[in-house]
Length: 160
Image 1 (cartoon, rainbow, N blue to C red):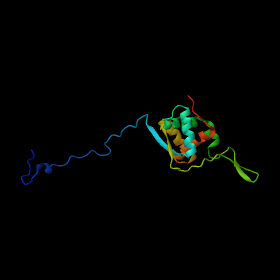
Image 2: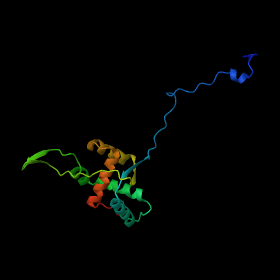
Image 3: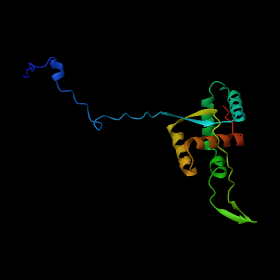
Image 4: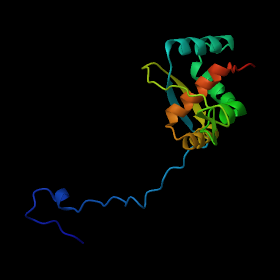
Protein backbone atom coordinates (compact mmCIF):
# COMPACT_ATOMS: atom_id res chain seq x y z
CA UNK A 1 0.00 0.00 0.00
CA UNK A 2 1.34 3.39 -1.01
CA UNK A 3 1.67 5.71 1.84
CA UNK A 4 1.44 9.42 1.18
CA UNK A 5 4.61 11.40 1.42
CA UNK A 6 4.55 13.25 4.68
CA UNK A 7 6.31 16.23 3.14
CA UNK A 8 3.67 16.84 0.44
CA UNK A 9 1.01 19.39 1.17
CA UNK A 10 -1.56 17.92 -1.24
CA UNK A 11 -1.37 14.14 -1.75
CA UNK A 12 -3.54 14.35 -4.91
CA UNK A 13 -0.69 16.14 -6.68
CA UNK A 14 1.56 13.25 -5.81
CA UNK A 15 -0.38 10.78 -7.98
CA UNK A 16 0.76 10.02 -11.48
CA UNK A 17 -1.61 11.33 -14.19
CA UNK A 18 -3.63 8.77 -16.09
CA UNK A 19 -2.30 8.05 -19.54
CA UNK A 20 -4.47 8.80 -22.54
CA UNK A 21 -4.96 6.05 -25.12
CA UNK A 22 -2.70 6.18 -28.15
CA UNK A 23 -4.07 7.66 -31.35
CA UNK A 24 -3.82 4.24 -32.97
CA UNK A 25 -5.97 2.64 -30.30
CA UNK A 26 -8.86 5.07 -30.91
CA UNK A 27 -11.56 3.71 -33.15
CA UNK A 28 -12.36 5.68 -36.25
CA UNK A 29 -15.99 6.54 -36.75
CA UNK A 30 -17.67 5.00 -39.75
CA UNK A 31 -18.82 7.45 -42.39
CA UNK A 32 -22.57 7.59 -42.76
CA UNK A 33 -23.86 5.84 -45.86
CA UNK A 34 -26.25 8.74 -46.55
CA UNK A 35 -23.67 11.49 -46.10
CA UNK A 36 -24.43 14.67 -48.04
CA UNK A 37 -21.69 16.60 -49.85
CA UNK A 38 -22.54 20.29 -50.07
CA UNK A 39 -20.90 22.02 -53.05
CA UNK A 40 -21.46 25.66 -53.85
CA UNK A 41 -21.01 27.17 -57.29
CA UNK A 42 -21.00 30.77 -58.52
CA UNK A 43 -23.86 32.22 -60.57
CA UNK A 44 -24.45 35.51 -62.31
CA UNK A 45 -27.63 37.45 -61.64
CA UNK A 46 -29.22 36.15 -64.86
CA UNK A 47 -28.34 32.54 -64.00
CA UNK A 48 -29.68 33.01 -60.48
CA UNK A 49 -33.00 34.31 -61.86
CA UNK A 50 -33.22 31.42 -64.34
CA UNK A 51 -32.60 28.77 -61.68
CA UNK A 52 -35.03 30.43 -59.24
CA UNK A 53 -37.73 30.62 -61.92
CA UNK A 54 -37.25 26.97 -62.87
CA UNK A 55 -37.44 25.93 -59.19
CA UNK A 56 -40.66 27.92 -58.75
CA UNK A 57 -42.14 26.43 -61.93
CA UNK A 58 -41.35 23.00 -60.48
CA UNK A 59 -43.04 23.94 -57.19
CA UNK A 60 -39.82 24.11 -55.18
CA UNK A 61 -39.60 27.84 -54.59
CA UNK A 62 -38.17 27.55 -51.08
CA UNK A 63 -36.06 24.48 -51.85
CA UNK A 64 -33.55 25.91 -54.32
CA UNK A 65 -30.66 23.63 -53.29
CA UNK A 66 -32.88 20.58 -53.70
CA UNK A 67 -33.91 21.73 -57.19
CA UNK A 68 -30.27 22.42 -58.13
CA UNK A 69 -29.37 18.93 -56.94
CA UNK A 70 -32.09 17.39 -59.14
CA UNK A 71 -30.86 19.50 -62.06
CA UNK A 72 -27.25 18.36 -61.69
CA UNK A 73 -28.41 14.73 -61.46
CA UNK A 74 -30.32 15.25 -64.72
CA UNK A 75 -27.16 16.78 -66.24
CA UNK A 76 -25.10 13.79 -65.07
CA UNK A 77 -27.60 11.49 -66.78
CA UNK A 78 -27.58 13.52 -70.03
CA UNK A 79 -25.01 11.81 -72.24
CA UNK A 80 -24.77 14.78 -74.59
CA UNK A 81 -23.66 17.08 -71.79
CA UNK A 82 -21.06 14.63 -70.50
CA UNK A 83 -19.66 13.13 -73.69
CA UNK A 84 -20.39 15.28 -76.72
CA UNK A 85 -20.22 18.87 -75.52
CA UNK A 86 -18.05 19.15 -72.47
CA UNK A 87 -14.99 16.99 -72.85
CA UNK A 88 -11.37 17.40 -73.73
CA UNK A 89 -10.90 17.06 -77.51
CA UNK A 90 -9.79 13.57 -78.43
CA UNK A 91 -8.52 14.20 -81.96
CA UNK A 92 -7.44 17.45 -83.57
CA UNK A 93 -8.00 17.66 -87.33
CA UNK A 94 -6.23 20.22 -89.51
CA UNK A 95 -8.76 21.80 -91.89
CA UNK A 96 -8.56 24.98 -93.90
CA UNK A 97 -5.63 26.47 -92.04
CA UNK A 98 -6.69 25.70 -88.46
CA UNK A 99 -7.21 22.79 -86.09
CA UNK A 100 -10.64 21.53 -85.13
CA UNK A 101 -11.59 18.67 -82.86
CA UNK A 102 -13.57 15.61 -83.85
CA UNK A 103 -16.31 16.63 -81.38
CA UNK A 104 -17.44 20.12 -80.47
CA UNK A 105 -15.94 21.57 -77.29
CA UNK A 106 -17.97 24.33 -75.72
CA UNK A 107 -16.07 26.25 -73.11
CA UNK A 108 -18.07 27.55 -70.19
CA UNK A 109 -16.33 30.48 -68.56
CA UNK A 110 -15.91 30.19 -64.81
CA UNK A 111 -15.79 33.33 -62.72
CA UNK A 112 -16.41 33.59 -58.99
CA UNK A 113 -19.15 36.22 -58.92
CA UNK A 114 -19.55 36.31 -55.16
CA UNK A 115 -23.13 35.05 -55.53
CA UNK A 116 -23.49 31.32 -54.95
CA UNK A 117 -26.00 28.51 -55.03
CA UNK A 118 -25.64 25.02 -53.61
CA UNK A 119 -26.09 21.39 -54.57
CA UNK A 120 -26.27 18.66 -51.94
CA UNK A 121 -25.05 15.40 -53.40
CA UNK A 122 -25.31 11.93 -51.94
CA UNK A 123 -22.25 9.70 -52.19
CA UNK A 124 -23.10 8.08 -55.57
CA UNK A 125 -23.43 11.41 -57.40
CA UNK A 126 -20.52 12.94 -55.53
CA UNK A 127 -18.33 10.07 -56.77
CA UNK A 128 -19.49 10.77 -60.33
CA UNK A 129 -18.57 14.45 -59.90
CA UNK A 130 -15.14 13.41 -58.65
CA UNK A 131 -14.71 11.12 -61.68
CA UNK A 132 -15.57 13.99 -64.04
CA UNK A 133 -13.38 16.35 -62.04
CA UNK A 134 -10.39 14.09 -62.66
CA UNK A 135 -11.31 13.55 -66.32
CA UNK A 136 -11.72 17.28 -67.02
CA UNK A 137 -8.83 18.29 -64.75
CA UNK A 138 -10.97 20.84 -62.93
CA UNK A 139 -11.67 21.55 -59.27
CA UNK A 140 -14.94 20.17 -57.88
CA UNK A 141 -16.65 23.57 -57.77
CA UNK A 142 -15.81 24.26 -61.44
CA UNK A 143 -17.03 20.79 -62.43
CA UNK A 144 -20.38 21.40 -60.73
CA UNK A 145 -20.55 24.87 -62.32
CA UNK A 146 -19.88 23.41 -65.77
CA UNK A 147 -22.64 20.82 -65.40
CA UNK A 148 -25.24 23.29 -64.11
CA UNK A 149 -24.42 25.88 -66.80
CA UNK A 150 -24.53 23.17 -69.48
CA UNK A 151 -27.99 22.19 -68.21
CA UNK A 152 -29.09 25.83 -68.42
CA UNK A 153 -27.69 26.21 -71.96
CA UNK A 154 -29.40 23.02 -73.12
CA UNK A 155 -32.64 23.98 -71.37
CA UNK A 156 -32.65 20.82 -69.24
CA UNK A 157 -35.55 21.17 -66.83
CA UNK A 158 -36.83 18.87 -64.15
CA UNK A 159 -40.46 17.90 -64.39
CA UNK A 160 -42.45 15.76 -61.94
